[in-house]
Image (cartoon, rainbow, N blue to C red; front, side):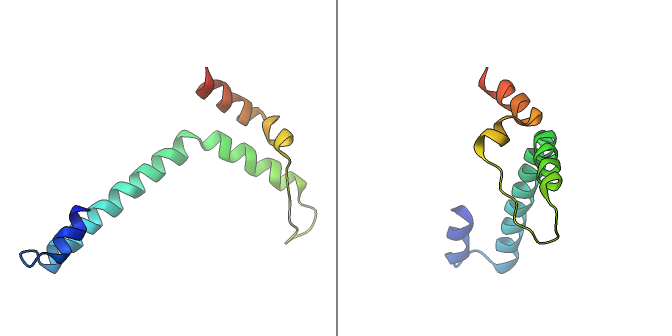
Length: 83
């Protein structure tokens, strides 16, 4: 919100606004990277399971909730974050 206020403020210049936006962008990317790294085993396990189901390029693959819940990486994640 501060960035938006700065953009509309006559005392703020374009360079300051760009720096603020870049800072926010950098922080968001850092958080996204951290989240993916933290749960990379879950992402990898789900991706491997989906890839296993593909028989033709472009084919749509759907896993049921119970199939997803039975994946070892999902079970490990669930145990880690619910106990």
